[in-house]
Image 1 (cartoon, rainbow, N blue to C red):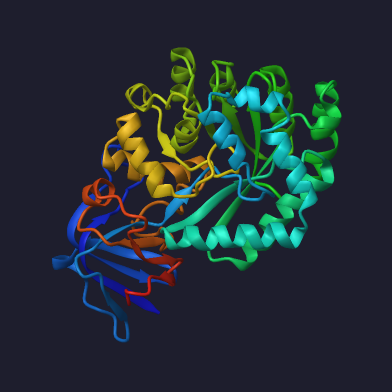
Image 2 (cartoon, one colour):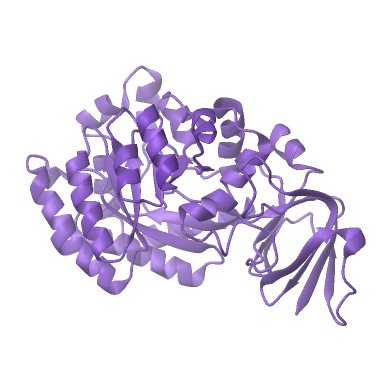
Length: 412
């Protein structure tokens, strides 16, 4: 079936060859979709002769963007930590809360206690809400199990949801997220467990596409992170690094040295680390919602972009430091608190986010040959969408050429 979308007020094509500052905006545009892929995109005046029997949809002058990609989330977890939010408001730090038994370890206990059905139902509801925002692809990390059975269970939840849900899931193994209580005094023994038991089984069953490590004071050292990542690479997994979130711990340099596809957080990355990321072609993933909730500094996007580092934007959705999955809000923060332009922010959740999950030849662009993932936004232009923030401006979401969500007041 051929589908034509016409009367697009502004179309963001986000071409793969463009600099991040140029989202390939076209006014008064149209799209042709066939077989779940983009076949043509351009000014409506140049629209090819319609194929007999094609379905035609009128965008009514709205903005159309590629399906949004949230390239860093912790989707599967039990419980919430709203009381820790209150503690931070009263002056407690992330480290203070963790030292008192809160933080990641608390969520680990809550996740272990939840049934698989509970975890699946909860994550499915979040995906439904993300789809309504125009999100069509989500990277999702484990890391709230911290033993072999529980980590595998989280990844199995993702496999189930990837099969059932319209959103594509990209699973990442984050067994080295924190030290579980039972290994608090012997971190190297836990690293042994990650490398020798968890990673081989996860790779054998193809439950994850990437392996991630939290390299930070109070989490894992660069040496421990290197061991996990090198082992994962030998097993064929792609590499990601939680790097330099709360301090300059050398995570950016480690990610670059090992050829990680992305380094994530990077609020405290130094100039040497930024230069190394640029040389390696490693994507910097900004998580401005976490900076907002924790009261921490924001990723230095202008320094990174000037150095030649591509900057993605993601939510870091989790129950502690970023309890929101609102990717358009993260985009707005990228503009307001990281001095990114509207086009840079959009590219950061489309084409650059696709790079961060090694899908940049398939997703994140509305160019011929790319998968037809898109969102119709109730705004006349990209600038207006981000400047005039609404709870949700997405009218309709398409995945692989099929409408998978429409707002009640909109009929494609």
